[in-house]
Length: 487
Ligand SMILES: Cc1cc2nc3c(=O)[nH]c(=O)nc-3n(C[C@H](O)[C@H](O)[C@H](O)COP(=O)(O)OP(=O)(O)OC[C@H]3O[C@@H](n4cnc5c(N)ncnc54)[C@H](O)[C@@H]3O)c2cc1C
Image (cartoon, rainbow, N blue to C red; front, side, top):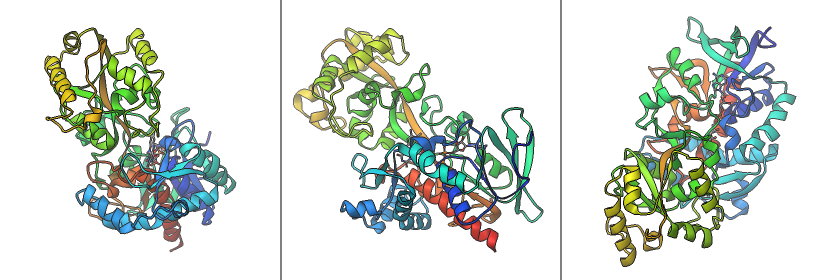
C-alpha cells in the first residue's frame, strides 16, 4: 500500500509538532498546493502539546496589560546570558517578529490566559488556554487540513536525497506498519523533529550531562532523527550540548516521568529551597537556585548524586502554611500541600526507589550512604538558629530546621523538557553545511534549529523562548520556502 497520496510534493515537512504544524499552515496559506506533513508517531502534536506559553515582546496582550519591554534590552540580556554564544541577528529577527506571531496565533484562534514572568524573569510568557495541545489540535490542525495539506502518521523520514548540485530532491519514508520504504520527490524539506532529548546516546556523547540522571519529561519522540538526516547529507553539527533543564526531578525509573510534573512530592523535594545534599551528605549550593530552574539543573549536575532532605517540620510547614515560594510553574500562589503526607506514605508503601525514611538523621545517612549528613544537618540547624547561612548565603526565611522525626531523603535527578540545537541555520532558516554554505531546499525549524538562540544554559529569565521560536521559525521557514520555490 502506498504511504503517500502523491509521488511529488512542493514541500515535505518532517515532524508534526509545534514548528511542523505552523510551517504546514503557512506554506498552504501562501499557496503551496502539495504539502506533505510527516509524523512518525501514531498521533501528531509532539512535545508541542505540553507547551504552557510562548515568548514575545510587544504583543497586543502585553500592550493591553501595560507590559513594556524594550527589544534592545532583551537582545542585550540574551547575549550576556549566553556569553555571546547566541546569534545576535537571529535574536533581533525573532524579537522583532515575536509579538506579531502571538497576535497572529490569536487571530487564528489561540486564546491566552495571561502574560507572565517565570520566577524573577521578564513578563514575556504568553500562556495558552489548553496548552500547546489546543493551539496545535484546536487551532492549526483543522486549518491545515482544510487547506489540503496531506498529513501522515506512523511514518518516519529515513533519509534525504539531493542532486549533483547539492539541491534537495526527495525524502525516503518508512511506514511503521510494515517497514516498507517509499521515496517521494520534493524541492524543499523543512526539518522539525524536535531535537534529541530522547536519544540517550546523543545525550551521553554530545552533552556534558549525566545521561543516567537526566530525566526527559516530554513526548518521548524527540530522538534526533532530523539532525541525523541532515548531518548525513553534509549539514554542520551545531550547538549540541544544551537541554532545557528545569531543575531537580524525582529519580524514579518505575513511574512515567509525567506523573511527577505537577506532584506535591516533586514540588517539595525539587522546587522549594529545602536542604539539598550530595552523595557524601554535604551541601553544595544555595538551594534558592531554584529561582532559575535551568541554573538549578546545572547545580545538581555538579554532583554525583543529590538528595532532598525533608523532615516532619518541613512537611507540617508545607501542609499547614503552604509553599515556601511561589516560583513553580504549577503553583502561582503559596498553596497548601494538603496531599503531601499521603503522597510520601504512598511512595514508601510502593517501595519507590527514590525515597528513604528513618527515625534519626544518623540512620538516614546510613540508608543513603552519605556519611557527612549528620554533621551537615547539625550545622544547618545552627544556621537556622542564627538566621544566617554562613556557607551559601541562603536567606533565613528559607532555612527550616531539620529536627523533627521522621526524616526522609528523596533522590533527585534533573528534569528536561527539550534540547535546543543540532543544525546551523541562516536567517532564512536554511540549513548550512560544514563549509557554511546553504544546502539548497533544506530548512529547519523548532528545537532542531534553535542553537542560534542559546549558550550553555536555557534562559527562564525570558520565559517561553523555545515555544515562541518554534511557532516563529515554523512560519518563517515556510515563508522562505515559498520564496525559494518562486525564484
Ligand atoms: C512538558 C513540557 C512543557 C513545555 N513548556 C514550554 C513552555 O511553556 N514554553 C516553551 O518555550 N517551551 C516549552 N516546552 C518546549 C516545547 O515544547 C518545544 O520547544 C517545542 O514543542 C518544540 O517544537 P518542535 O516542533 O521543534 O518539536 P515537537 O513539538 O516535539 O515536534 C516534533 C515532532 O517530530 C516528530 N518526529 C521526530 N522524528 C521524526 C521522523 N524521523 N519522521 C517524522 N516525524 C518525526 C516527533 O514525533 C514530533 O511529533 C515544553 C516542553 C515540554 C515537554
